[in-house]
Image (cartoon, rainbow, N blue to C red; front, top):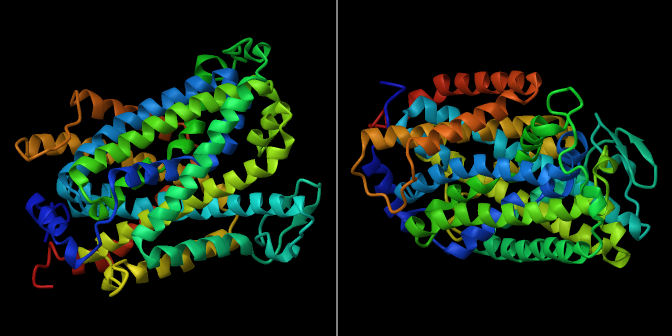
Length: 483
């Protein structure tokens, strides 16, 4: 029994061919692109752009977006090769199982909980904050005990300060509703996600088009503010630090790969979904950041949690402010939806391999979805969203994602060495340069994260390793064929 035993490619492909017994293939290439855009455009664009501009890059935050996108593109190219080779649910977990063995697959599967589950909880809290802003515009005020977790202080736009409540009920409700929607079916979820994506992309484009005419070019001078003498505070190092900040805005494109087993034509659709969504979002991000820093001097975004609304107010289209908030709510909703879907598919695949209880891989007889997994994460994510100030865990989401990217880049090189003749409908170009570049950039961004995020990562991984050796290893179907 070896913890380094790899899962044969033939077995993975056989699992993919048995889709009629498992997950239902309903997603077109267009739906996969929308899935990626739905996961990417959200909290990052509407909140972190201002922070990166005010604290690190100034108007050159546009260059920060491009730098972050390049790092994601290297990893995305590696994801695309794997997704076309191994069209099975599970994302980086499945790829690691095929290249680096069971133990590394478990590590990355457990690590993905940080990205998807805690990511959904974090965005759920942000969704709740914008909902309160929308309700306040119509003088609707929810009881303070029901809009804030016990361990955080909430400041509303009207100046009201809430020192800890009982539960963040709006966050719990949105997580619960979307989890129930995912149980109903992937096709239905994708249809709603497509609508939400169209809505928020439309508003982003409206922001760019309407805002362009109000740009004050004086706000772009200097385009790259002089470094203050501290690394990361403006100058070229500030652009790099800004890239680390706005990297959060790109988290999610890899969620497309978790839906491989539900794609109609995964060999073609996976690369289109992953790279297409990344390209579309990068273009929108750069234009959005250019307009935003042209409307308002970058230093005015310091400490501003709603920079998009602040910038849009300069246009004079105040009647569209409510529409902007509604679009942001739609954006957050689709991010939560995709994160919850990605997490359930990873656990579904780990359960199918015996590393988790069979509970997680039970398929609903009518809807053909892993409904018990969805119910489990309904409770798990709701607890974080309702009772924990998960904004403090944002760096955990990022470090988990970066670790996944690193392992996928390593995996491509390993697979090229071990199985050079395996069919690949998409090949990562310039190997080993592209995967090595992806590894270097992702490790550099991990290094830039606070020490607390590394401590939390170590604690989380220690818990995961304990579960593997007490349950996963003993019940692994690969290492225990009789089971």
